[in-house]
Length: 541
Image (cartoon, rainbow, N blue to C red; front, side, top):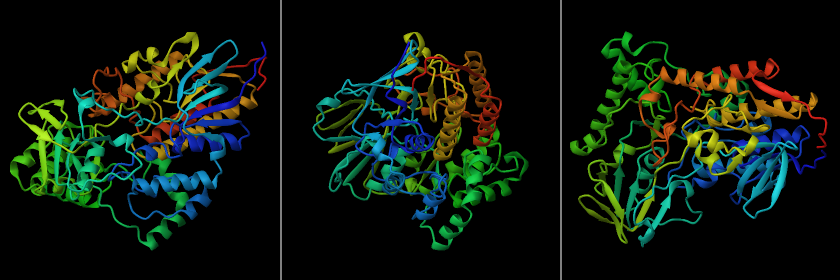
């Protein structure tokens, strides 16, 4: 059977993943089209324009490393870049590499169905047009599906309301307004200190208190910038040789082998150092409950030291393992609760019953609000993929195969059995606990190398073996079960999304970037072991 195909590859998303995937495949001579729901490039950093949005990975690492020219021509202003600066960087890269000519904006992919008769993917867009491709590659990220809680009465609310993940482009005024923020995860921790000085009254509706350590952000001195550019190659190597893809290794000692005085001194040092230093003070903080307790108690003592009202400090104090949710960095988060115009509502004790025309009704009180901000996070990891009707062999959907997220299985987080010629950049069970851009670069390069190999070997069909993906998923779970990550509910396990089933395994490879890169590169070196590779005589291309 003869077949015609519109593109060699179709990529979804024009963020860090999609842009680099486009650049790599295009340079290798493949025809590529990227579809992006937004009006421009940026991905996560296009949508997340909320006040205070900032990366928690240091700027010198949270950027591409594949181009010496781009590295030399771009200068970051601060240790942790704000959203506008990151978005400017992504736009700069798109311009420098002339990527927009192969991107279609304002186009949302509704479905992607694999036609096994002719080995093509049929992609249907929101205008019902259909395009075909040999390879289907998702670059939708893990945190791009905003989680707006199903709250009774929201449709009746007369004030302004926003979700941090879909913040409007226009300027939002806070002056003289009573504002409620629902949620104190990473986004809430950034929003709250930023808007508190601007609003008349701020009401923080907290379900789960957070462990948060200081980012210790600061402007980057010119001499430091020059030094990092001079050792760009060395910094690039650190991405593949460290657990988080940054210049940080876990401490060499156990929390339990030092004296109390040494421990307090070390914790104070990493607290002041900032970034993700604190969770790495000792190697066993995220593995050993007793070790974790020492780290947790130190942060709790800091909360009570910073927050002047003892009762409020108590409400802000967590009671679970530190670091088992993604560690949060902040700038003056706890200090914000010393402001007279900031109020804390514990929604575990005083539950939100409904949204009214004028605000929020809890079990005990009504709060008149001019604006409500949902900092309720995302339907993470699987959510962005489930928003698209993806169907593989036999018409089986990805959502069906993965039992709505309860039984996710992948091979390296990059592919999944039953879905030939489909790749996921930073998909479920890939190594993403750390520097996302480092993970993206490695995933994109691995996928592009595989596709190039398939072309040279005249291979038409690439599909993960089911037994190998089952074993890989089992390995992911076994590694995670050695840590405290599986002992706490978090967005990693989908517990922030009402009605979402808890996965049987843990959806991130926790052995670290360095181990993941080694494993995936060994698989490639062994002729892409774990994949079925088939040749097809009717490839037209």
